Structure formats: structure tokens, C-alpha cells
Length: 259
Image (cartoon, helix red, strand yellow):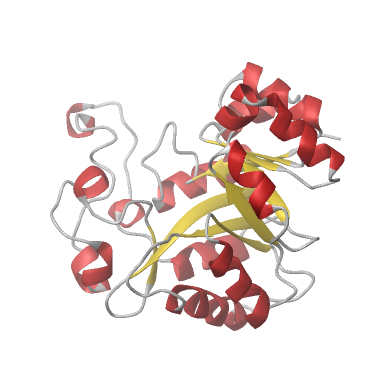
């Protein structure tokens, strides 16, 4: 069975990550799901941003959790990816709105408006000054869309066991993905994670520690792997029977899979 191809921060190899443009492109090329990281602004909005500060993706000073959405909306979140774009006469016209900070609500609306089912893998980032408020706001937003039941297109991911336990208490039918950064964490985590939780190891750990994949298979765990960008790494995933590969290059992964 072919794994689901999940666009990591959108089609982020060719577009600025977490921008609406990157997600539109991922839907266009046929990604089965979209992955995003979420952080909470000072005025309570969930935005799709990986880093806690703006230095890398907006070339600005500031920390996401201390800024209001209105302040973030004034920044350019795309120029860092292609700083010479303004000098390219052959580049297609772009909608400036596609390159601004992306709220999770807008991303959910985009998925809801797609002409096919597109799933979402939402990672809550921790540690954060707001703690459990991040998960509470997330569940409230998913409730607004009616996406907390068995037919929800959303799953929630985190490296924080506590964060996932919060989501489970508030919305027990939302699928959960326990992300694993280091192979040696699994022996401790396996005693704590829910029996139905999906496990999300990094491809580097699977490559460098083959025993991790073996143990996950022996435990009959569903596996979602990040970040898979090469044919060699995709083959590791296929050999393990993973059900989702999270990639910066969704079009390339789909091509390799013959989709």
C-alpha cells in the first residue's frame, strides 16, 4: 500500500514554508495531506510558523508569542526564500496575501474549500509561554469547523507527550502522532503513549538506528515519518510499511510512488 504523501510546511522546497502559496501548491500537485506547525500570538491567534522568532523567515526582530496578529500581518514571510524574485521578469504574478503570515483558520478554510479530501497534520510547538492554551485554542478552532469527530481530516502531532494528552482529554476522537526526535526515547515513550497513537520518527533516526523501525513494527505501530526528501529515504519507509511520509517535495514523492 502506498503511503500518504504529506506536504511538510506546504510544498516548501520550491516555496516559502508555511505560506498560503506553499499550501496551494501542495494541493495542486496532489499531496494527500498538509503539515503545519502552530504557535499562539499574544492576542490569541494560532499562526503557522515553525520558529519561535522571526529572524529566519521574516528577517525581523520579535518573538511570535509576544506579538499581535496585526503586527505579524505587516511582515513579508516569503522574500527570504527567493530574495531576487523582484528582478525576475519571467516570474508569474503573485498575490501578496499568499506571502503573509498564515493563520491556522485560513489554512483550515483552504482545506475545506479544496475540491477533494485533503488532510491536515498539525504540530503544536513546545515549550511555549502559553502552555496548554495552545491545545485549547486548537481544539476550539477545530470544533468551529466540526472537525473533532471520527470523520475529521485533522490529526495532531507533537514532541510533547503532555500536549498530546491534553488534546486527548479535550477531543478524544482526534488521531494523535507522537513525534520522536531520538531513537533512544522510544523505550521510555512506549510505556506512556496511547495504544492507538501514531508514532512519528525522523528519517535520520530510522536510517542511523535501524532497530527503531524494527521495534515499531514489532509493536504493530502505525508510522508517519519526517522529513523524507530522497528516493533512498522513501525506500526505507516503504520497507517499513509506513502509512505517511512527510516531505518538502510532495510532487517528487508522488512521482517516485507512481501516482
